Amino acid sequence: MKICMIGVGYVGLVTGTCFADKGNIVCCIDTDQEKIKALNSGIIPIYEPGLKDMILDNKQNGRLEFSSDLRNSIADSLLCFITVGTPPNKDGSADLSYVLNAAREIGKCMDNYLIVVTKSTVPVGTTDAVRDMINSELKARGKEKLTFDVASNPEFLKEGTAVADFMCPDRIVIGCDKGPIAVCMRELYKPFAHSENKIITMDIKSAEITKYAANAMLATRISFMNEMAQLCDKLGGDIENIRRGIGTDMRIGSQFLCAGVGYGGSCFPKDVNELIHTGQKNGFEMAIASAVHKVNEGQKKYFVDMIKKKLSDNLQGKKIAVWGLAFKAQTDDMREAPSLMIIEELLKMGGQIAVYDPEAMEQAKQALKKENHKIEYANDMMRAVAHADVLVLITDWQEFREVDLDQLKKVMRQPVIFDGRNQFDPLEMVKHGFRYYCIGRNC
Ligand code: UGA
Image 1: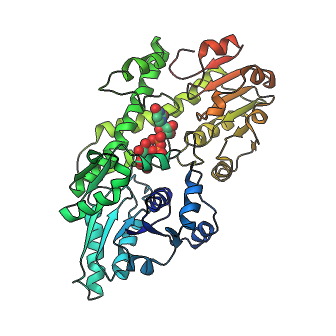
Image 2 (image 1 turned 90 degrees about the horizontal axis):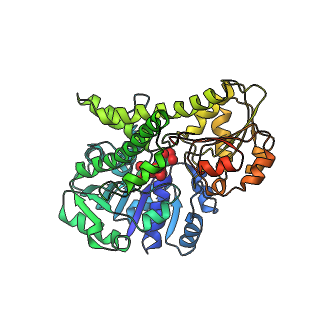
């Protein structure tokens, strides 16, 4: 099939590349000409395992191209995916201007039948608004007889495992109101589905809400476990035992039950807030989403307060090493990363900060530069921690987990660790001579 993707962000780039990899002809469109130029010269704007090789391979085989020419691209496409960003507005609602602008441009350019698919995360009713926008542009051009259809196809891939998630998804959700559209979308997704029942078709609004429900449910599990971890710290008990004790119940399942410094990233915080906003706009309270957000904000503060309490609120003259800056491992994404708030608080306490992240150093520099902080950006994890009085671990990269503990103790001035991701066994840490603090494990 010939496919046009509007928006070369995380989702657009991964989706377009994976569609091309299964033999479709894909053109990825973006208004950012610099980005298109970079992609055409083989420079990939994001770090995502496996993506670069796949892009280069499909580009070379003529199945994938990058351009800013929407008119040309949709002229011979059957499907047009909208994969632009929906960043948060100040009031927590999703900014739909990029989505509606893409719809406007489609209406201005299209001259043949097209299936327009919203893949961006959009509040319920947006796909209908996309349809209205295209209709009004067609009317303005006197082309109201031109036919098109719309569908909603939310994406569930995770950063860091995006290619694997897309190639082998748990399920594919397709929202549409006409049988033939579902048939076409099923055909497109057949090579990814591996079994028929992985493709779930439904009405458009249900598909839009499913995306928010999935992210809010996962965020709820994390906030719930973070709350339980605080209970363990107060009353005794070990959150890791509780995680095993409930995760083995098939009805609960074992994933997304890790307590830590709170969830971050471009999705959970934004989508939980958008749900709260949608409730408010429609006159009811999304009580669970509100609580999930509140617990998450509190969790970052809980970790900082733990550091303050154990170090008597004074970091003056102390070197604090921070391992892990991105919002999670396997990504260079700093959006809503808990490290930003934690580092700011450590600086307020008078600490000299040295940071290291395996992938997010450049992005972290940009994000932290805004605040005008004096921070040492170390080239590797051992340099960051050399002569440090305290190590604060915020992202669960494997290389941190596999550190040689004897060597770590040797290079640090004082063997004190605050582990915001419960990466180490507390008993082993004590055995190695560390003062070790973590989340919900009573140490
Ligand atoms: C999330 C969803 O998992 C994807 O299904 C969805 O497609 C995506 O949002 C999106 O809407 O685009 P992502 O934000 O890439 O994916 O990252 P996750 O792996 O879900 O992690 C989110 C946050 O939760 C991270 O800060 C992570 O450290 C935290 N987390 C995750 C925990 O604190 N505990 C856990 O047990 C799991």
